[in-house]
Amino acid sequence: MSVRLRSHWPLGRNIGLQMAGGAYQVSLFHSTSFLPDKRAALGQKILNKVPSFLKPYTINFINKPIANLTSFLILHELTAVGPLIGIWYLFHKYQISIPLDLPQWAISKGTRIIDDSMQSFNFDGFSLNEKFQLISEGAYAFVVVKMLMPVRVVLSFALTPVFTRFVIEPIQSVFSKKKKEPESPVVDKPTEVKPKRVEKRRL
Image 1 (cartoon, helix red, strand yellow):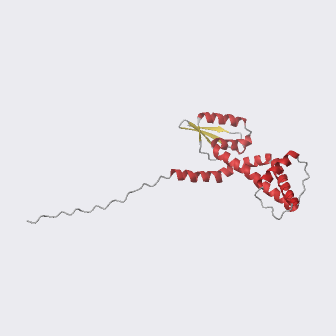
Image 2 (image 1 turned 120 degrees about the horizontal axis):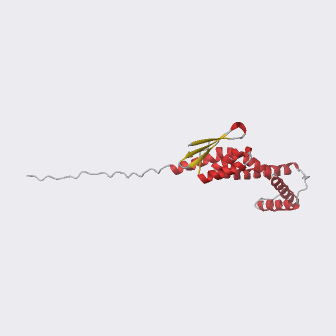
């Protein structure tokens, strides 16, 4: 049984709920995952409360929660590490002074984290002032990245479907193929049967 629900989303997209073996299937973006009845009802309640522009992303999360959550977490970390290194480099390379009145607790936390993470860094050839300057620049970069948290969340959320499709799902398919491949049966080498020699009695 197949039911087509007309959607009020942009681009005139439709949601297809298909009944298959006692389970509903929400079809969008060529989705193939099945939702049990309770999960489909819960997903529909969530969709009713979500803004229209977020519904395509929400359906992807409902259909493939593990893959999409993994993508979101990876992207969230990448959008933190990349800007942190880039901003830190700019501060150090061009000696940029921070005109922002940053909170003292944030600077202290950033300084502590950067200092702890650079314990294994070789500071030979650095004066005490240069070491302090480098750690301070890293602390300021850390605070700036933290202030960009809303932008990072939105960017990670927007890129999650693409990252899932082109990175996470191919990796999952590789591992699933390895699990499905049957082990080749071990065939014992046939033992060579030697004909028994029968001696005939002479008359």
